[in-house]
View (cartoon, rainbow, N blue to C red):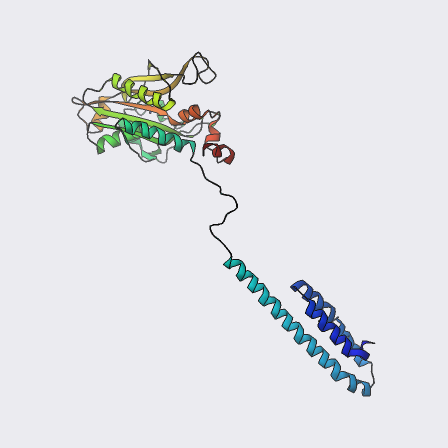
Length: 340
Ligand code: PHE
């Protein structure tokens, strides 16, 4: 059969090779013609069936054909490989690092927005911003703050103890004595910071939340200074005239201790936020206990001061109308993107 017209078979195969454009086509060609079951192998099988004279005539032609096709095949392979490389290089050269289809902009977390705003307000009143460690000693979190060993706040259920002496701070009040030891009166500072309590999580509780501590120590500081400061702060923050309501409260590190409510900034006669009472419980505060001043190395006969602690998490939820604390602490993009 084909042995009779090797010449045209060869032309045929060469044409086919020339038309090949990719690796897949090349492989199909190889299987069909050059593999062990391919056409050329079959021709060699047929050659065996010829007589000696014919073999001598046809054999060399068939060998030539095989060589020629194999060589063309190899060239084609090389050519395709070079093309692929060139295309890859081209792509690299055209790669523009400044090009992006969508300009996705990040946004600040609501805590960051709020903290920035609060810091601005207090800085405008002459306060400085302070910070302290989240991993604390028992002294700064409890003993130094006049919280005796049998106080409920010390029970394991509330505190993440690391060992006998170390814990994760349960309140930003830890920074009070630290700052008294570092600065001299008169001093005024706020501490926005993270605290943790070993509590079950629900819509309004999480084991981690943010507090805002405030402290001012100078001569002749009284509850009046505390209330004026807080009223100014809240009025600026909520951009509404906020009134304060003061009730007695117990915190071992202040005397007198106060619970302070703010008039609801969202309504006039009661809404769901203030549970129709017109007031929102917002702060613990008071006049710093002389024992605490002593621990801080401050002369309590000369100086007095106020301190307050406020749920920064609660403020954020109030200000931005966030119904569930878990949203605030999640990485839910749909939620976070609203604050860009
Ligand atoms: N640290 C108190 C709390 O976590 C709040 C507070 C701060 C009360 C400062 C009085 C003075 O509840």
